Amino acid sequence: MYLAIAIVVLAGAYSAGWKVLANKLESGATQLVHRINANGDRANCENISAKGYPFRIGIFCDAVFFERAAAGISVAAGALRSAAQVYRPTLVLSEVDGPARVLLPNMLPLRLNWETMRTSTRIASPLPERFSLESSRLAATFGDSETAEPAARATRTELHARPNGPNLDVATSIRQFELDPALLPGRKVPPTDIEADITIKNGVGLVLTGDRNLRGYSGVLRNLSLLAPGDTGISLKGPFSIAADGLLDADLVLGVKRPEDFARLLAEIIPEARSQIRNGLMAFSLTGSGADGSLELPLKITRGSAAIGFIPLGRIPPL
Image (cartoon, rainbow, N blue to C red; front, side, top):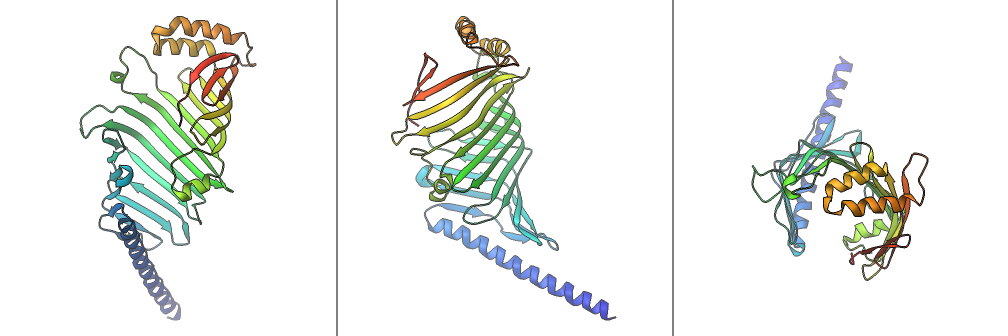
């Protein structure tokens, strides 16, 4: 009898505590939306509620919206569901339903849809200890049409970010990225796997200030690769910096995997430059290759002027 009474009391106390925490969470989320709206932006989380009893707790909304009119940016998406285990409240998982309508400056409305989109955030101060986003069957369409063919699609996308001292580490992966063939008439662009891994020095301060301008910052590109079917593609790695006037300086290594296959692929994408591609491959092959037959070429960018060895490639406009 005493055990039964103790269980009932503990269950009642736990339920009451969960309810108090849920009310505080709902109130905090509502106040956050109000603060955003009071600062000149617009935000909405429709029908905010806390759910997940008994062992989880999180915010649920029927739809989400954010607009920063001064920058010409807005995002509207479907239902949002988030959850954290009661015994592990700093790890928050969330899921959002599509489609999403995105407005960016000087662009047509962008409609994004997906099969699943989930995030994982390990909460810490002043920035999360880790943030991850994963989506499957992501498709992007320009305009508001629900029946138009997507301009681009990918079977799987991932984005991961974390503070590393004052620096910021960012990695992304896009699998089977495809463009609508109608956008590139006469060109054969195969599905491509894209990976990037970069460190931005003092990137934590960049995020905290909300500044989207990378001028005056530097970093290390650990990997940027584009890999096509047949295990051929290109990669870049090395340090870079962006001057106050936006001009790029970098000391990179350009890798070409299976160069002959890559040259044939590039000739299909740019058929009018077939002979230049063949001649360029022959010239670069004279510099030597790795044990697996891949090429590694020094790519130098000085004040926006890019060159491979003594061969100029052109200028990169200010970023």
